[in-house]
Image 1 (tube, one colour):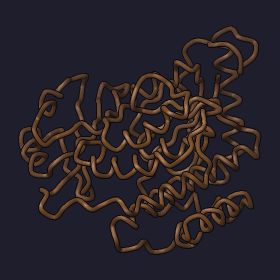
Image 2 (tube, rainbow, N blue to C red; image 1 turned 135 degrees about the horizontal axis):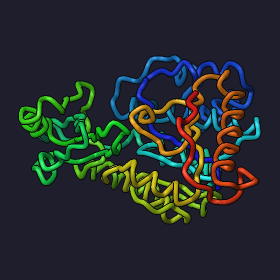
Image 3 (cartoon, helix red, strand yellow; image 1 turned 120 degrees about the horizontal axis):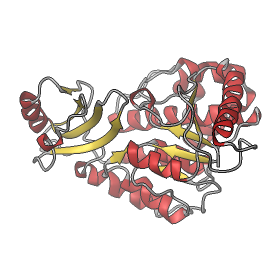
Image 4 (cartoon, rainbow, N blue to C red; image 1 turned 90 degrees about the vertical axis):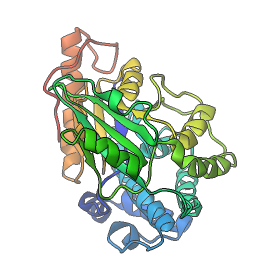
Length: 335
């Protein structure tokens, strides 16, 4: 085990790198043509078109756009001889990873994402939902402020960085988040664009909708392990991946747990293919290579080879793809 990929949802609605990959590589254009066949969404709509007005359809298109960009870079890297030995996945990235590890076909994944446009809207009578960032500094622990608090949920734990800070994403009812922010205005920010309490029990209706569709799909045991950020143990069966896809909508995501799973597999270097949300917020414990533009591909392949050689040298191993090795060198390469 050596090379891991890290996938999460992208933040930007439009990604210039995805457009550039589409323009340069035939394998990417084939992927987008396939996606159009499976969903009816044209390459222009995914890469540069305006988004639908209806929120459910808009969210589905955004998810497809994000995952298409990642799978496209995955394919280009594969043509250059670079393949993952495991995939580390956060949030929507778990769905992306399910086809990268071979548990679902791409057709199944993109049709599933398009099916999600039918997720019922939150009833208008329900209180308004929101999202907030909560950042602890200097190794402090102020989690008691939000743990067990009515209407507030720990959605994503990004873990601590080398400077001792720790970022978490909180979701829940906006009124409860605002009340909490008044108690900790120095470390908490309500996000203006966050309107859905992701990774919380408030999304149980969405989770049940996805669960019903997932039950109709045949999940194969993955060809390589999936380290989902929902627990410290890698997923190695189709049944585990099936459950994780729908449970992801209501469960807390934890980068430390996902990294523990990836490291237990012997991952020595991480590649981040295409658009990604969380990678800049994380201090990865292994060298990290980002592939955002076509010109990154050749450098990425070389950087991975170099990182593996450095890890093997530090561990005394002769073959960079063999053995467990010891701690990776620092600083990590970043493209």
